[in-house]
Length: 172
Image 1 (cartoon, rainbow, N blue to C red):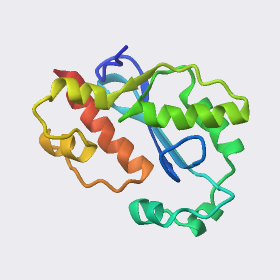
Image 2: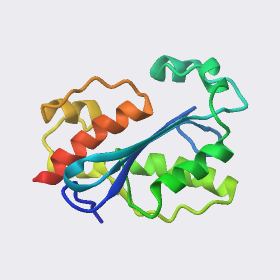
Image 3: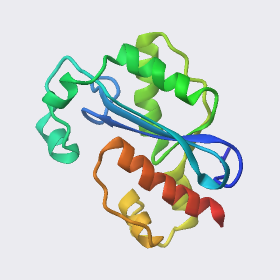
Image 4: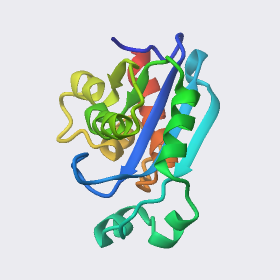
């Protein structure tokens, strides 16, 4: 299933986490863009999420997210239901959707929330449409497509860049 950026509504989302495995790592930031006709954003969602452990130094170095910032965040028990309400039943698009859905579904299981939304992978689309690229990192694909490619590794900014890439890839 592929949500077309020129028609059906979808949500482009991104998570920042404390590591690579949803088994032992946690979500620390959630962002999403609700997208309608022609890839136009109608609403956005953003939440920093409190965790019960220090943010690993390498995650702070990558994202700029600090323990102090998360102290101002909300509990995942509040952030996740708000995110689910924002998304509704729309398809969820992400750059490397398997990673983000793994974390989302693991946390949803812990919270006893269902996430039945259809996942769509913008990275898989980039690999299929641009096989000549040496890698398919979001920054690389954005640069190849002539889009702004400054990646902050913050969820909302990555959503914005990922959405631009996705819109360009679905136009062809």
